[in-house]
Amino acid sequence: MEVLLSRKDLLKVKVTLGKRLEVVRFSPVRKGKLPKPLDKLSGANLTATPLYEVSSDVRLAFVAKTAAAREQRQLYGWAFQATEKGLLPLARMDYHPSHKGLHMVLNCERGLDLTNRGLPGCREFALGDVELDADEEKDRIKFVALFCKRLGIELGKAGGLL
Image 1 (cartoon, rainbow, N blue to C red):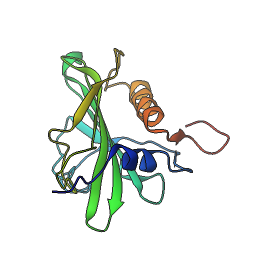
Image 2: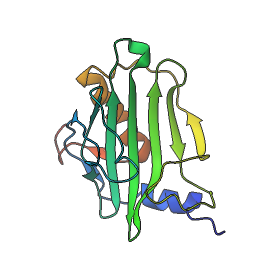
Image 3: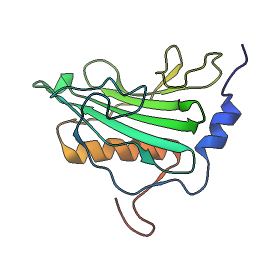
Image 4: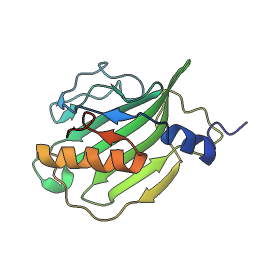
């Protein structure tokens, strides 16, 4: 099977000019409100953003999981490429304070069609230690900023802040 996304292809999508995320709003998530592969997310302890369009073919979504213990709280950021078949996941950044910290999974050089799926078996990279709390709005925004910085997406309105 042919490789769907090479490193060069991923870089081309990543450096598309004009990508900008202007607003981020987390709200309770209901099953089926987000597109595949996020359509099964639901629960009282989950909040998510809608799917944001940041360029003609790049979409972003963010999820926060709350819990009583800080170590069980988690943050997720997804970048997708819109295709005719659906959303192709490009990258996912996760924050798990209990065991992995901040890390990113990239869809490159895999021979699988991951359209409308997660990123099983894709390359994973540790991004270092950060202290974030998914229950704190300022930390959710900080996570979004870290995610966007890694993918070369500008934050806020042109000339302004997020």
